[in-house]
Image 1: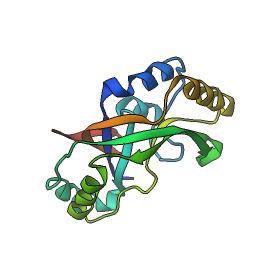
Image 2: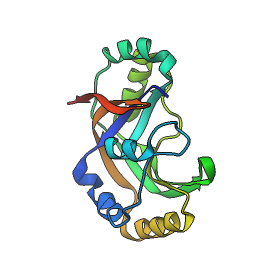
Image 3: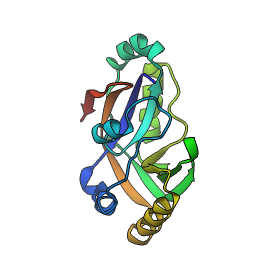
Length: 174
């Protein structure tokens, strides 16, 4: 993988989720099989919704295109806690997402500027683990504590270099 462009959430709105996740020290939001250090990437990347990503073979062109993009405040709604099978025998726990005010128009503007489609699986990864019992326990805990739909204001956008080493590149905010 090359880079990923993510939507970042208002910390105050996302705090109830973070408070619950803090009780599970082994939570790691990075999928298996990505070819980089999951622990390092988990420390660097915030909880987010991936908007766009591209391979390193497209980095030069795409990084130039990111110079033309702008941030537009918008909103999505977490619609519930979901889980599914993931790479290497792991389970993915995530928030399902529906689009809110301003998001779709902004996403279309970004698609035009970048010349590529958005990430089609809109979600917020909470944890990826091979410990299926832990995922189930966390899913139940979150479902009992959170109220859906939960509004999530997108307060910024960040770009990350997403292969060894993983690091922050740039931020856009209003």
